[in-house]
Image (cartoon, rainbow, N blue to C red; front, side, top):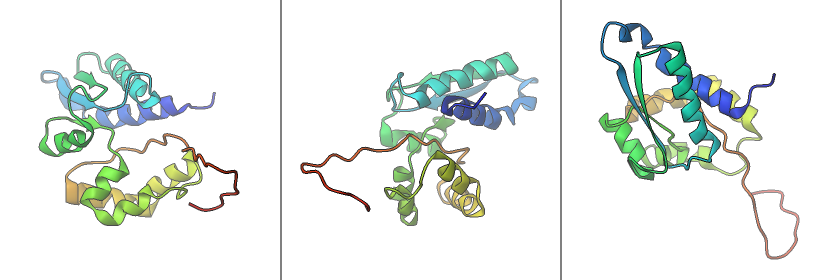
Length: 166
């Protein structure tokens, strides 16, 4: 069976939180506020539910996973602030928001930079991707667990023409 994007997102999230599971047995459940501005029908929002269900099944009672979608807890820019201030433990954060704080990473928001989801994932798992994640951790105080490819974007034109570059 080929893993789906939803499965990949959930596995990454479960793996990250499960690293702290050993300490959870001796204390109250670990509270994890997971927030996003995306709506319930988005795949990455649905992955949050898979994450919660998978973690609850693998570590019953160890975690109190609280899911907040549609910007119900924080607005788009508020998710990043909440992570940095300790008001949320997990969130989907775009490279655009990271580039606001670390301008040199604005390059990662350029159209057509990555060919597809595999190319995107290979970058983030490379030495250069590790350097990027380390810089974000050191300068912003947040840890990037994985990346989520949200698909291609569409270009609409008034007149038909051949477009080869951004």
